[in-house]
Amino acid sequence: MKMNLFTSVFPLLFSVLFFLGCKKEGGDLKEEQEMKTTAARAEGAGGCQVTKYHYYDAIHDHEQIEEFTYKNGRVDEWASYYGVVYKMEYSVNGKMKIARAYYNGQIISTIRFIYSNNKVVKEIWYVGNTQDIDDEVINTFNERGQLIKSQSIAYDYIVLNKYTAQGYLESWHYFVGGVSTQKGEYTYNEEIKNPYVSARPGIDYNFAWVNSAFGSGHRWYSSEKIILFDGNGDPFVYYDQDASKTLWQKGQQNNPLRADYVDAISGGSIINSFEYINCPGSNSNNLTESLVQKSGANKNKMDVSRIRPLLHGPQKEVIQLVKEMRKQH
Image (cartoon, rainbow, N blue to C red; front, side, top):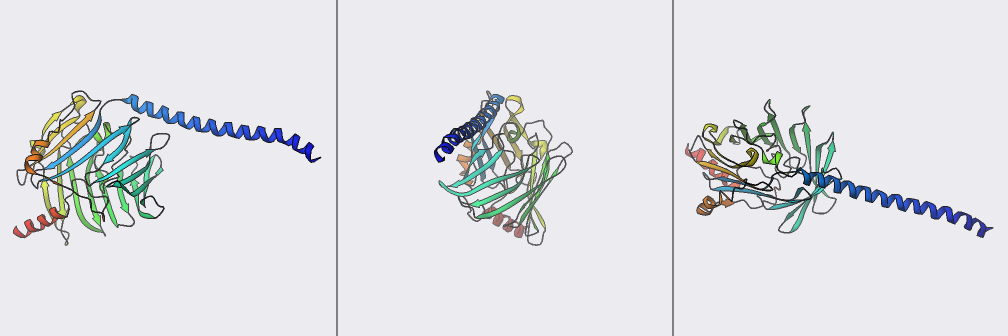
């Protein structure tokens, strides 16, 4: 009886297992094919891909360099100016899924991106490769899909963002412990493309910085004003670029190669330069290198107590310099 039952059940069991195996294999193949298709579309989009963004503040002899490499048409690695390299992983539909942060070759953070309505509403930062949560960053978007607020739960900071009617970032305002700390303001007088939107596929927004909305909108800025606040909340202008004096070097399709800004306060210069691949006639050829080599610019080093610093935000030594300047004035 048992033998009869076994002989009758075995073909059915084998069929079920075979079906499940085929279904799993088919699912894997389908997911793999979807990933290949998505990657092919990204690759097929072609066009310029920014590989280097070089910011140089000649007034304070300070530089910030961001570099990008690509794989399957999207950013594969993002080397931040403060020494952390972010290695990207994407979902089947090509959205940011995980970023692993490395410093000196050692993993220090794993970031998982949580979506709602196709926007990253939460970043969960884990310690190293563990499940221990270091921080949670909550992102808030308006009805136009613009990032208007980022809030760190563990590190008690908030960044508020405002936009122009055209959708360009007008300002970001950084608060720590509810106290106003730094602010950036922008103008847009030229139809210069924003490489972080048009030429950096894969990265939805600049999660590697505290002011992660920087680089929003389809234009690169004509002027930037950086404001610091002291312990009493009194503002001090770090620099204020005069948009009427900005000089542009443009590449293919109005991609910026170089922008020379002039500080209206000191008269000093601040330079942005970009490098690209897949973009004939659009290579800056390290336009800031000679200037930096002559000056011996100060490169930022990692502050392990603050993984996500500001882009274009003065670091500790610059803040001290500002304090001394305030005393003199």
